[in-house]
Length: 118
Image 1 (cartoon, rainbow, N blue to C red):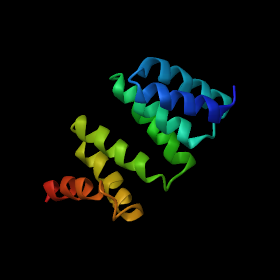
Image 2: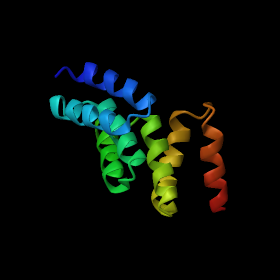
Image 3: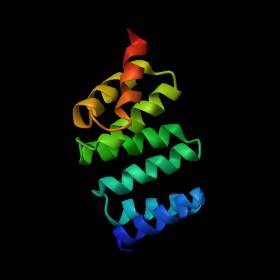
Image 4: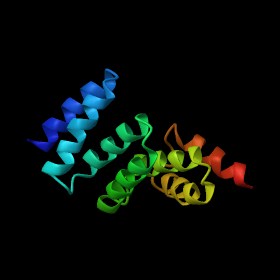
């Protein structure tokens, strides 16, 4: 039950599109190490892929509680809120993402979502 090993194995399964199996490993990683932000982030990604957006939002939020400067968690949570039509909830995460990672390839996506509000 080593959380890093569970996470890495989950990532291999996720990359192989074995989302349910990856989800189970990510869940075990969060149980083995409740303060492991990366495990919560990957669990959120799996929940989102499985269509459980409420659970995904909760897991992204937990990752951000543990690591407030986790730029990818801000990006994915903002994207999740956009999919839900909750632009008011997405905006702060787009802004934080840009503050943390303004020069990444995904920064332009965040800028476009923010410009769409204007």
